[in-house]
Length: 236
Image (cartoon, rainbow, N blue to C red; front, top):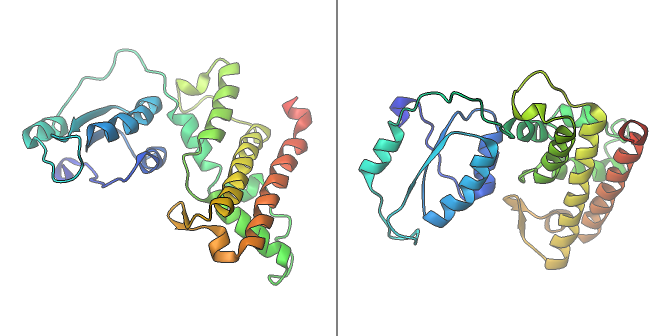
């Protein structure tokens, strides 16, 4: 597969698959996994409009199983002619939603209010934790849905092309606001459940303490409301 230009990746769970897709470096996917895992993952792949083919393992149990190697090799070597009609895809909007949470775009859209404060300022420290958590993983489903709803109201130009359309900053900030509310709920939920890990790292209350985590969750709620209220005229 690597000799043919494939990148071979071991992925655990659909969020990782989706993260790889929205990275912008995937042209097509050959999936090899248990049937139930393929069903979950390929729902996301088909939504993105990425060409894909799947080879299920020979049992539904991911332990002590085997695979039909010839079937896999046929999938890897598969060649299909380009489609005669361009298929609609949400990939462009998925990537746009993901890009909003990467620096420097995140800080451009949502400048840090305490950036000029001394590093010892507790409010600046809380703000830094909040921004770091906001930028962490996840499927970005909520901001994507927000952008997709906006695009649909405009005739869905983003589903047909990766150019010729754009998203205004107020629309992006509205999508960001939805994610800040979600992330705030995760911080507080992790405290309630005393969860140990989130996004592959220790939860905020385990690292910084319950008090700080509560403050960060509250900060994210306030940030969401500020983002929406800031652009209410343009959004209205």
